Each structure stands twice: as C-alpha cells, then as structure tokens.
Length: 143
Image (cartoon, rainbow, N blue to C red; front, side, top):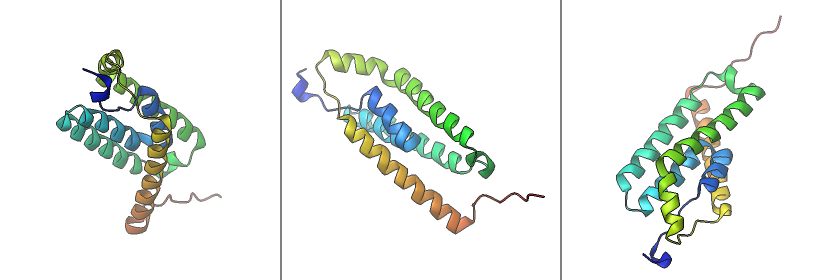
C-alpha cells in the first residue's frame, strides 16, 4: 500500500499531549479517530463511549479531592500515563506497521488544538452541571 493511500493518524505523542491538555475526552477522540480512519468504526464508537463515561466519573469525584493541588497534579500525570499505556496496548502494533508502510501522522499542533477544545468542553460541561444540579464544592467550616 502506498503512503498516499493511507489516512493520517494521531501518534502516541500527539495522544499524550492532547490528554495532558484535554483529559481523556481528547484522548478518546483521537483514538476513535484512528480506529475510524482505519475502518474500525465499531471499536472507535466503544472508545469514545468509554472516554465519555470516564469524564462523567471524573466530574462526579468528591469536590474535596478536586480542590487539592497535589491531587490535581498527580491525577493529571496519572491520567496521561494510563492513556499512553492503554494506547500502546491497543494501537502500538498498528503504529509500527503504519510507520513501516510510510504513513504520516497529524501535526502535534492539531493534537494541541483538540486538547484545548476538549478543555473548554469540560469547563462548559462542569459549569452546566454546577448550575443545573448545584454540584459546587461545599466550603468547609473553619473554627
């Protein structure tokens, strides 16, 4: 197969950058996009569905956890490491054969844009949940 017939994919690095900037939502989009580009639409749907469920679970975390800077940093780094490990397991062999066949990856800047867009989407979703359901952090009483 010639490289001009191969679709562009998101690389492991791009998925890591997108995850760092836009959480599992960005990662799910890029993984699903890779599967869809290669004609595996059913797996792509599963991946995006799982990433949306993961994001909903994150939003439902106890508010006390999310206000801790230490938790936020550890969670952010852990999330990227977890996504990269899962991506390597799911698509690692595909990346190798894709590169051997002369395939090209999307620009890292595209992953940055996806990460930023996913971040804004998460902020909007969280804000809507707070305004609709009152899920704001409860202030602790200091005595």
